Image (tube, one colour):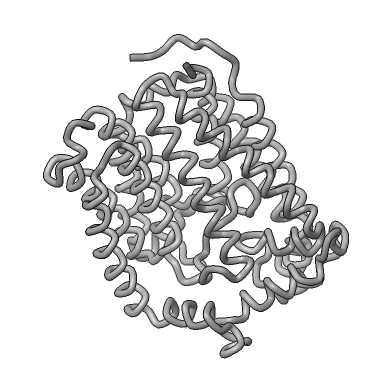
Length: 366
């Protein structure tokens, strides 16, 4: 049942979020000016769109911050079914928009939305409700793991038809974290881990471009102008940045060396222009955000709120680790954006909305 609000929202969480958002807006502009001017004749093209979604996201964050998180239990079924419908609609030829080889977007006027981003949040809502109501069954396969992972894998399958392995992987990993925290048995995860690893290898082998990414990750210089191009150019951006950076706006890699630097590789441009100091400050902001999120999950007034907070903070942490890992060459290229910094309307709006839910849970903390 709804809880009576006891405290103000977590100020440190708000500060870290807004700090990352402001840095993100500055870096989206700095990283995209050349690309935007060349393709659209307007160096502010990406900034204006990102600013629009940032304002929309802040409004959504404030709205969610003041709506009792228990309210969303009543809409869980509607949200999950709507997201499944959108995942099916986006696959219809001529309806879904194709970008970067993936049919992952639906056009809405002058803008577009990515249904898989909405599914990540809807899945967190669903699992928080189901696991909190059925925790006594979580140690069983039939009533615990099968209903939850079955739905997760169905959504993953639809996302893979686009295909979008990165977003699908974030959703699955976030779901696994929530199920584990809810009390699932370790031996079940070991079995599922082996099955998942085999399936992951199968997905890689089934698509030549994914295999090329793995090979280029191990040795990008085998194909420096092909599969290894992005990783090499990303490292070329980070290296010259040094301790203090080349200066804001002084990036060289954004001059058509690093493809679309305002999205997946924005941290590389940030490191090039602002150096180790800038990168460390951004990572510190993420550390504060994750710390406060974990604290909210630990001190939430009930299991439902705790699992919801765990899912949200887990999703953010996973995306940060994957994105930074790719940019510095520790992981293969996956197409995962950096939360609150990378250009992308659906991602930014949904991220701020989810943080709004987290802030509301913080207002009920024990």
